[in-house]
Image (cartoon, rainbow, N blue to C red):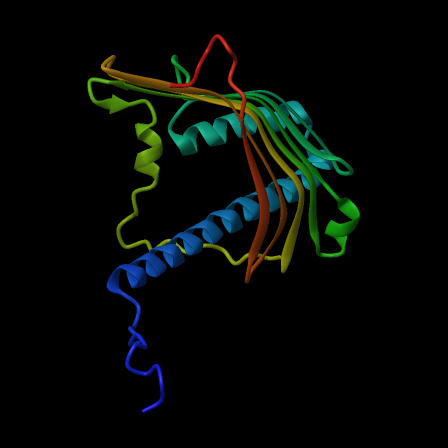
Length: 229
């Protein structure tokens, strides 16, 4: 027997807790990738629609159609103050509100700026995605939340399996993704209330079918007279 063998610790396999943690981490990564792919696919549809709409429909008509269709789909009244789009620069949506008083969501401005030359080559390069001053207000009255219609949309339809569309581009390059000065309110029947203000998020990176590489920075800068709770 070699010297030191008696004191050498025996090798043990991974503990059940470690295996459970690894499994949970894998599930979170899969869900995160699925969310990113869905958002990017939705943005690609917006870009494609903007190219077609610029030449065939005036912006005001598009705004009215978008309001009607989305209100019906979401089962909540949706209002858009203004939509502007350009083949060369992208799309901007101003004054978006969702729900009735108190409003469930309000966004001051949404900007989508893409690179047309790269898009024509089959590559989606997003110069900027900006969500400016989003506000969320969750209110419960007699146990019913004002976002209940959105929860009903997530329920699976019987005998109708849901499948996600295949992502059409090999890679998406995101130069800048910004959520600026977000805030949220929660009021549960007047018994429990909370709020958060001054939340900003910045991200950039690349996403493909096999991997997601995003650099994320979260900032919290509330107003001095409105401390977060």
